[in-house]
Image (cartoon, rainbow, N blue to C red; front, side, top):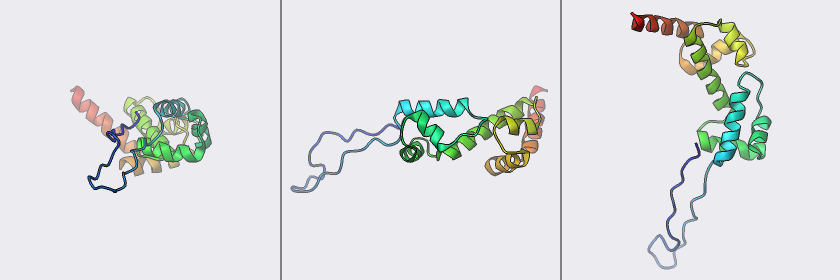
Length: 145
């Protein structure tokens, strides 16, 4: 999942003007693949638990300050925003399955309470969890017929 960085090409004057300074070589941005894989595995394994920046940085084996910056460069989201989006995506899967109550889903995914879960779900999806589940069941029933 690491971002590919274009090869800066051979060294030398890239401007074509004598005496011009060369641009700095392209620097690799984001976490290396191994650190990112470890951080994502930690998130997946602890999705329903309280996860902090120190926990994720420890899993990636780098300082928390570098981790936050590099994780954002790798994924486009802060670590906590990424975690929240992943929890909501998992909640959508669980709501589609239709075999658990909303309060159970909220608790299983580490939300403080059902209200916090519902507010977050609506902010990220545009629907309440109940609306989402109802729409998916109605849509699924229509496809099955």
